[in-house]
Amino acid sequence: MPNSEGIDIYGTAAVSNPRSAYDKIKKVMQEIKRYGFSRSRPFSVGAVEKRMKDYAKEKNITIASGNLYLSAQSIAHARREGKVSARIAVSEKSLMEFPRKRSHMRLFYDKEKKTFVYVDGRNKFVIHPDYNLKFGKERKDRVVFVTASKLSSMDEFNMKKYDEIKRR
Image (cartoon, rainbow, N blue to C red; front, top):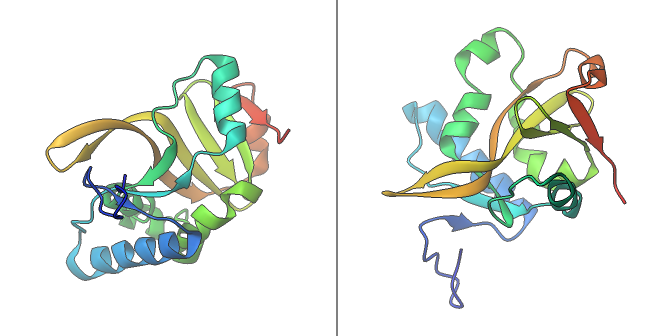
């Protein structure tokens, strides 16, 4: 969270617009390809959507922060070799565009896993509303992107474990 001078006083990189989120995700993916890892700290890709906050309040679900965070580890998990070789990994472009496009995606709540899931018809992006994330030597609870994968079918979301969160 940046202070009044734009300096991040909590060790996270705040991303103020979708284009910079795109660039930050791209940079992390390039580091992972080049070195096999990235030392980038978790960073915010924007505010938690109102529909997610409203649903959480209505269902008594803890939303740990006002912003959605991505970490190098979650990006690596979404693009790990096993997913890529099984052809279930989301494309790099889809991952980079997620922060900008999420407000136009369908949103579900998985009552069993206690996670939110954004769905664009081809991919799903899993968000944990109360995840303990490491920032340097400190741990803080945040709303965090956990992973993503390609969808085999939208039928998955017809199961009783999912609630669709409609726009109001």
